[in-house]
Amino acid sequence: MYSKAVAMFAAMVRSAAVRLRAVGENPESARMAGISPVQVRYSALAISGVLGALAGAYLSLGTAHRFSPEMSAGKGYIALAAVIFGKWNPGGAALGALFSVCSTRFRANFRSAASS
Image 1: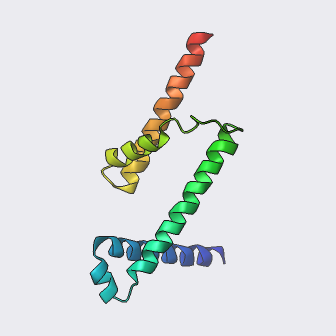
Image 2: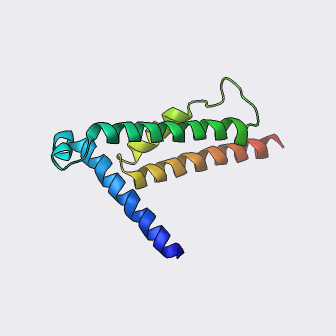
Image 3: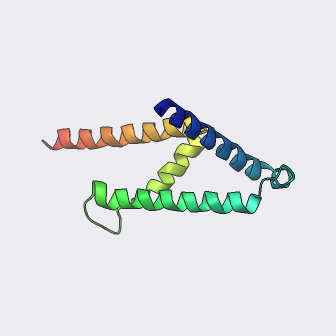
């Protein structure tokens, strides 16, 4: 039962990804294939807004437990650098983000070891 649900979700995500990519690469061809580029773009915009809001909520409530003006401290630029480092490929961007996180944790651990 669960495998069927996972398979249906994977098929839905895959078709949504194909539609999004088609609209991004050539909206006119997507329109000819029966895909509404405007609807796909607004859906992607809404989903990215929700994910951004969840990330901000996690940053302020999950890690710091309070809000401060310098909370993000350039994390958006680090994310952009990870995407460029990954050559605009999701797998490469994930590796770039992992490298950034590991270097940040190493620096934090090095500072705490040096101060004690």
